[in-house]
Length: 105
Image (tube, rainbow, N blue to C red; front, side):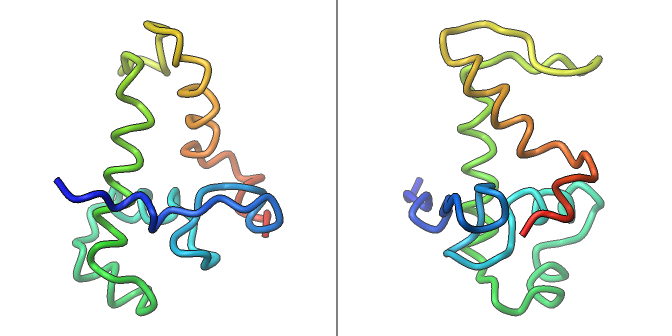
C-alpha cells in the first residue's frame, strides 16, 4: 500500500485545525461524509474538481489509521482498548459532524 498521508494536512490556522486535503479547505470529514452518503469516488471528483483520486484514497487511509488502535462500538462510540484510545477519541471529534464544525474556517 502506498503512503498517501502527505496529502493530509493539519494547520491550526485553517478549518479550525481539522485535517484537510493538500492544504486546501476541503476537510477529510467532508469527503468521508460524501462517501458515507453513498457517493462514488467519480461523483465526489465531479463535485470537488480540485480533488484527485489519490486524495480520496488518502482520506480513507487516514480514517483507517485513526481508528485502528481502538475498538469501534457500533452502538454509540469508541471503546478504549489501548494507550492510543485518547488520540482516537480526539480524531472522533474531527469525524463527527456536530454542526459547529461546519462553520469553522
